[in-house]
Image 1 (cartoon, rainbow, N blue to C red):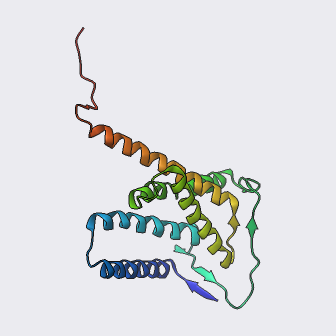
Image 2 (cartoon, rainbow, N blue to C red):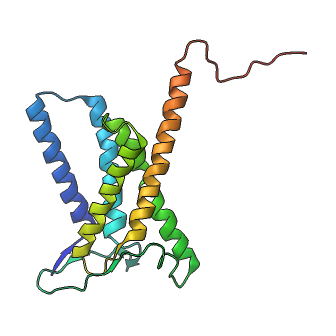
Image 3 (tube, rainbow, N blue to C red):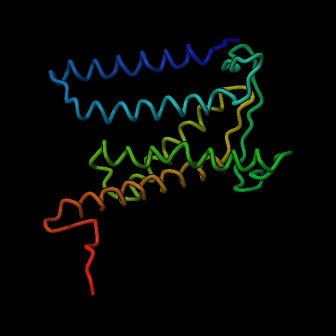
Length: 193
């Protein structure tokens, strides 16, 4: 059995991120700092996803529980493929609300960042599919961790978060475009009658 602390997991992710970015910089022989700033936002987004998906919210003695990987024994696989059956199946309704809101809000930044970073993701359906793919990958990875549940509800809620994020992106993009239009003023002038 392997235990990975939150700090070790985030440091490993950071090392992999920096290694991959360094290899890209060497191959391209340049660094585009504006793009790297947006990629930093994606790094933060993925680091937050790792924290909340793979490490439980509760603490023991003030410490976050480590991620446990069991290679020696076969763990029971817990999968829910029926939508919305267990979504409210919590002892405390507040926990159900936190689960729903958390799963949606975790992926809102993904829906904003993806179309900014990757120009081929220039429409709603492409961003939605990319975000759903990321969520699906996370759900599949969870199959290998004891105590985790691969749940269709999480996939649906995460994808809804991506859709909301893309809506926010389009709204910001539209406002920016209007602000750059000659003669546009966001203020309505005061006129006397």
